[in-house]
Length: 466
Image 1 (tube, helix red, strand yellow):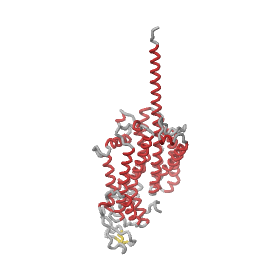
Image 2 (cartoon, one colour; image 1 turned 120 degrees about the horizontal axis):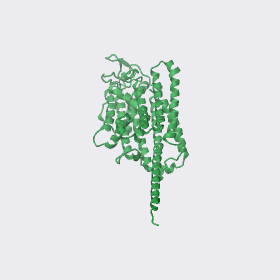
Image 3 (cartoon, one colour; image 1 turned 135 degrees about the horizontal axis):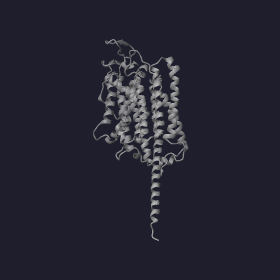
Image 4 (cartoon, one colour; image 1 turned 120 degrees about the vertical axis):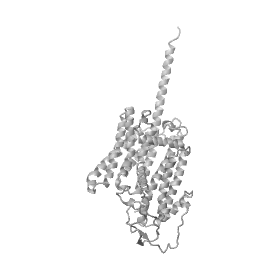
């Protein structure tokens, strides 16, 4: 079934061996003959397609503003394949492009977050330690617009070229796209929002190395663990990025080699669970560093929460490395128990710690009500929705880590997109909680200063002449 478990046909004429010349074939035929290489099959030219040529133009590779038209061309080319080949082809294409599609979605939603904060008059730049040149929601949406154009255009070129037999050219599309994204992030010149790119890279560096010496001068900031929490929701994206880059490095894009489950970049690779668990390890180390700096025991409880994700991921990965009977009788029950523990603990921490909703406070407690704060003022259903959806999506996200879903790419894409949406609404409550804490702290400081000034006046009044 389309979008289900991918079955691998034997000797697919759609692919080439690693490092071999491109395989040019005709999609309108089912008759096959052996090639001169003797390792895979070439289709015979169909009578329907005789004399038909498919000239390539640079417009098929370069981004085009007529996005829907190009998507239609690529999709029509794919739909001409047989069902088995189409599923196999889309599975591989999805692996290369779905990470950046999900990142694009995240950027759009982050722009929505910033727009709501600006409408509610929240000075989010203050507790994120952003400078005056930080990106506004308009600039975030501008970046998301370019990503929405470039990523599907590259994917369309891949679909079109691959389905027309230009396998080598198609294989270059994800390579060029990933290289362009990397260059856009690390470009050292003062273009493409240099200060914001530098801030992002510096924050990521601090997340990856939370115990480095530079922290001796400055504690972990709110932006550090805020971004690290978001990265835990993007663990599947990082896993797919690792698999995609691995295939590019080992020249397995559009080749037969990656079909082998035990190959370097196959579905049994040990790198998959390692990359999945890394965001949780980074967040765990941050909590330990916070405990060292502050001595607060709640940071140890938070570290325990992230540690519960580790057995979920590695027990799931054991499905590919143990006998089926052993998995069913021993490791699967352990995986279910660890999944329940992780989901329950994470849900509790979201509601009671990150959101501080134990007393069902109002959403967006701001002194000057704007559109969203007035709309949601005192509406408890907002909290009911947030708590209920968070619980369901927490359990769904844990289930996604199950190994048997690794090839159900549409299901995984949907679950990952829902997890990004869960994190999107988590941001509102998390920022609201931080904003309320900051306002409460300022009010306490103001009240203390007022009390001190009044006391000073009273003391001075005692020095009068009788």
